[in-house]
Image 1 (cartoon, rainbow, N blue to C red):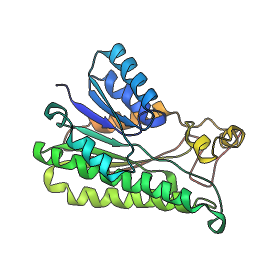
Image 2: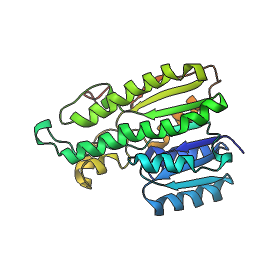
Image 3: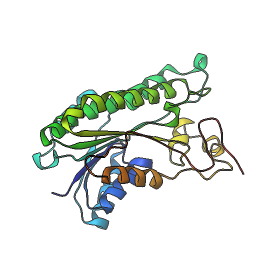
Image 4: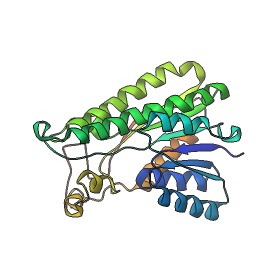
Length: 252
């Protein structure tokens, strides 16, 4: 088998771009997602384009039972996972704390934090046995600074940063690398999901700037994964040139 990368949330955005990037570089890939039609189509297209093996797994990272059952059911040859990319995540709503929908809060906590933890907990024993591995956790600049109407989303992404640090410390003795990637404004389905399908609101987020593209983040993740085994980029904040942080952007 070639090297293996497991990528969650692979049906769009950063996850899909990572699937293509790692396949282009001769990784066999395990791709997960909730939208089976997209997952199957992506699997077929990548396999045809690059001649590598693709294993699609249709489940919801929010379900503890599904995560552990699916990962444990992997054929032995697929358990030698070199790279885990915890990409599955979302923002739901952009409301003040007092007006926020608690269902949105649950969705973000269950996906962005608990789902990431479940997948990592299920995969780490394989990496421990192999004595190597690299885990990527997708955070956000919202995990560095809190902004208005970002309450629970910011909280979950701050938690991703903290959990990444904790994982890095606890897994040191096994030679497992942990990298947290924190993108700024990126033009994917992110804003459309956040605004519940309102394309006009989503488009305004990127007015006057050239935001990151999914492929930019995938390139960065692949670069980090390609470094020598004794090198680990621990924490990386990435923005487009026109964005300094969560608050300051230059819009032309």
